[in-house]
Image (cartoon, rainbow, N blue to C red):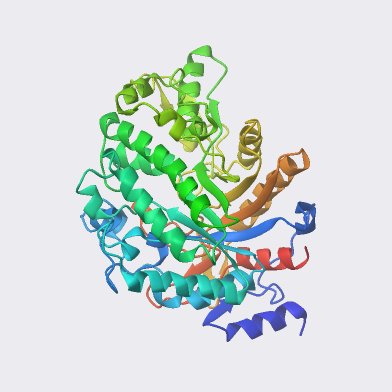
Length: 480
């Protein structure tokens, strides 16, 4: 019996997990990679990321209040197959073994978020001690098992009680958010030293408050513009509270980003490309650096000025220790006037020529894009350190008994990591890479069909099975 088979058999009996074997003959041998984990450096961080609503379940257990995602998913028609996160991966009860998966794949970091309504059921006021105790147990389990806890304060699950008062559109949200951040950082600051204020403002503000596709399902710029400014203020205020409450804190926040390319060289597409770049990539990354909002390239933002009070633009500035880069694909734009305020729109990957590989999320597989965005972030003088806090893909898994084969996902990670290393070798200070996601989970409006996990979850039995991609990380990192 070789080493891989021995590891597999030993782990088959651990925490109900099943690991697909390299040595079983079920996976064809592959060409050797042209890079190793050691090439990234001894201090490079490797981890996997999650979000509270997507994995925890226990949506109304032990005093937790409803979030906007509880409300949104309980209304028919908002989510594919009318699915919700009421149970999801049941991480609330299975967290010790799930955290153990991190170390089994030889990773250093577990990125997770706290659910605002689990600790403050009404968003403000009365504290739920059972909720605080739960995250104490999660953090303690991380520390006991040797996985660094990296905590995200806000991953899209605003308390419904606060949404009922206007949510992100109400300037009072700044005070509400400060109360929440103060509670979390004072409670866990002696154990957690690595913090992210928010997850992808562009996603929850644009998709939730302008396109209406995510919670709370609102549409039009009139809802988006105050949400944009108030959340940007919270991003900086949250950073200041962390730094005040947590000695030696490593403070960051995360940004979704995509290369924006015109469909061809015709000049009429240039304006559309600049506007989408301002919306998708620049809108949230530039204010904390003192560069303001990119109103010149995205004129619709000028309507936001009525929400900006004296002193606000100084207040949105904050010197983050690191910027979290989250990239999945790219956008290709075409000027056609369908969306008047953008004077154009993105093109579906299936309409590109030649047609690229497309994930189950209908996103183009474009490994060079993460290199492009690392170089893009690096051009800003005030960005000193970058961590890839999310990168991953949804592809169909082939489940064969206790084995889960996901050749496309494994190749995706290899190709994207090659581009991360390329940027690092060219001098970009990229200091870590966190795969999305640790577990198959609830994928927001897409429900449970798209599977991003390194670990397969049978949502009927809650059985976990590390996929071939997870085993590849295990092997790759063991040789680093």
